[in-house]
Image 1 (cartoon, one colour):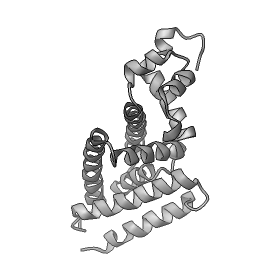
Image 2 (image 1 turned 30 degrees about the vertical axis):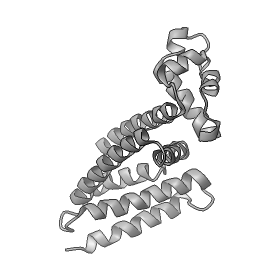
Image 3 (image 1 turned 180 degrees about the horizontal axis):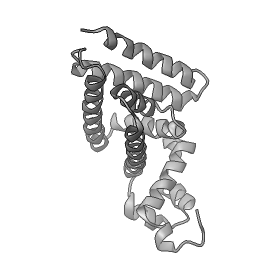
Image 4 (image 1 turned 120 degrees about the vertical axis):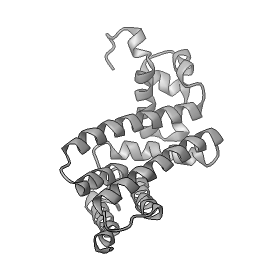
Length: 197
């Protein structure tokens, strides 16, 4: 953080959200507090509470920041993809947290999903986001394999695989779920679609 930046810039919601991401991705949900985020952002506790008054709000803010970064990466990568299968592969790589931001994103995603199990507000956001992701993945699968008769359960299967890989990457890094292994697993899940008629 640039200490010479005006305090209003340092205390803005985006800057605080970045601090939330850093605290959550390095210390986990148990270490996440308004005080730690304030210290990380170099702002007052009141500035953090103004934007994120509860731990759930902090986790939602972190997930919102990860989603915004994810969408920006996807837009850029999809613009460069030449085929429908390349677009699908790009999205699979991002959802499985195989990129450079993957470990951080996986940790935030896991904390968010865990909180959804006990917090109805977070659960509603999680369900809406997952429905949208499933629809998006189904569209990509249909475009990549137009003769395969893609159904919602096909997208759900692929998402479950990608989610499992992401959680493993967040929990274990490259120890068990290295990028090459993850890519082989994704390819194995996608392979039957090419043969379906």
